[in-house]
Amino acid sequence: RSLKENLRSHTDIQKGNIPHFKEAEKHYQQLSARCVASYHVIDIFASSLDQIGLLEMKSCVDLTGGLVVLADSFGQSVFKESLRRVFSRHAVDALPNDVGHLTMAFAGTLECITSREYRVRGAIGPCSSLNKKSPSVSDNPLGQGG
Image 1 (cartoon, rainbow, N blue to C red):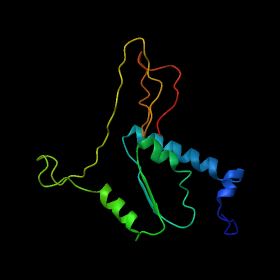
Image 2 (cartoon, rainbow, N blue to C red):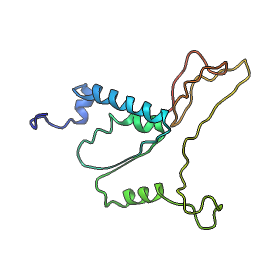
Image 3 (cartoon, one colour):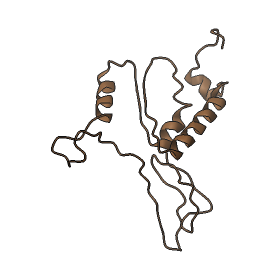
Image 4 (cartoon, rainbow, N blue to C red):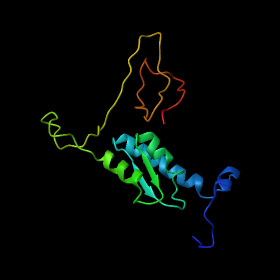
C-alpha cells in the first residue's frame, strides 16, 4: 500500500469513498462466523487517535457478544477501569468453585421452544443464530441481534 494514501475521514465514509471497506468487512464477518461456531468472543481494546478499522470489525464484536473499549490513550482512566472490570475475579467469599476465577460467562446458549402457534423470527441484543431448523423457528428470519 502506498504511503501517499490518506486516512479516510467521516466524510469519506458518508460519501462511500472507502475502497478497502467491503473486502475487510467480508473478512471480519467470516472471522466472526468462525468464532461463533467455536464459542469464542472477540473483545477489542484499542487506543488510537487515527483510524483502526473499527467499522470493519463491527461484526466481530456484535455477533460474538464482545465489547469495544476505544480511548485516546492507554493511560486514560476509563480505559484502565474498563480493562480492570473485564478481568475482575470472584471474591474470596464466593462459591468454592468460583473463588479466584474470572466473573465472565462462556459458551452460553438460549434455545426457545414455543407452542405450534408461534415461531421465533429473531432476537435483540448481542447474540448469533444457532442455525437450527425446528417448528419453533420461522422460515422468514426478521433479524439477528447485535
